[in-house]
Image (cartoon, rainbow, N blue to C red; front, side, top):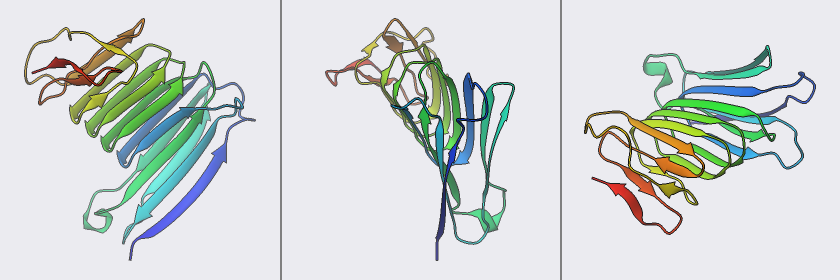
Length: 186
């Protein structure tokens, strides 16, 4: 029987947070802008035998979130997922080994990396840098442009400067603009 544990954390009294760094081994990361300006983290842990760990700590204006899953047969099927409400102007760095990253309605700098998982960006106002090894990248509302690297085996860099974006996955570029057309496809 699979178990689930959920927890919501608020970081309004931790002092000014200028950056959030999220690292998840297996699980999704969803980030949206906080309408009321409060930084909240909703953590969901799922497991069958070995319960994974989640930790959140603030150091020098940086909130570090770690969804740790130990290796071994007891942890197969375990995941730690986060849903984060991000205040205006706060930068984000998110990475997953296996899991999707969805970011919507933020205006700070965004850096995303997935080993295997889709990256979706919508209404992101700050600079974007994203990389995925196995997964599609979608950015409704952003205009696609040609990536710098044309090597087929390269990891997939994605940058956004003044609403222009480029994406490259290991299996080929899959960037869709607001009209749904593929701006860069191999």
